[in-house]
Amino acid sequence: MIRDKLERFMRGRYGQDELNRVLSVSALVICGISLITRQPVLSSLSIALVIACLLRSFSRNTGARSREAEFYFKLKSGMFRFFRDTAERLRQYQTHRIFTCPSCRQRCRVPKGKGRVRITCKRCGAKFIKTS
Image 1 (cartoon, rainbow, N blue to C red):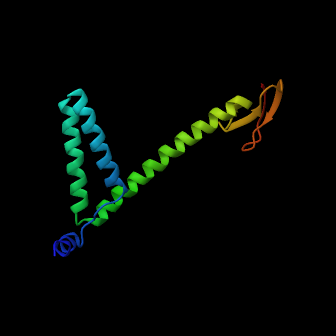
Image 2: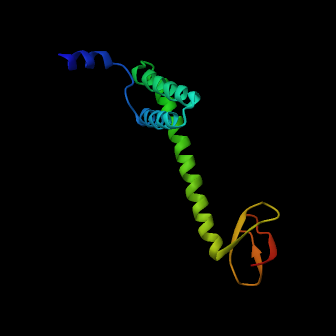
Image 3: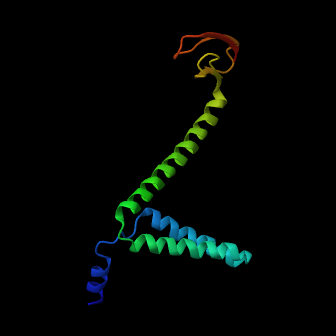
């Protein structure tokens, strides 16, 4: 009986998605921090996140909610890509030197410890000499 009423109420509404789960967990974490630090700003922020999560869940404008979720996924993948690329660059700095082509700004990777090397840019064909 109650389940049927809840199903009828939620019909046509957006419901839960990953962004709502992230908002909910963020609200809980910020609420816990606000309890420890006794900062009213953090408490207000956690309440605002809960309200945003509820409004998104019960919204009938599924197109707008889908665009918000798509924006979140783009942002999330961009952040993961940034940290993955930064970690890879740090690993490469141990074994390679990375130079920038003076004409096209392309990054060129050269093994460390080879002395003076003549580097040919793969993009523009410019040649320059550097010490690795």
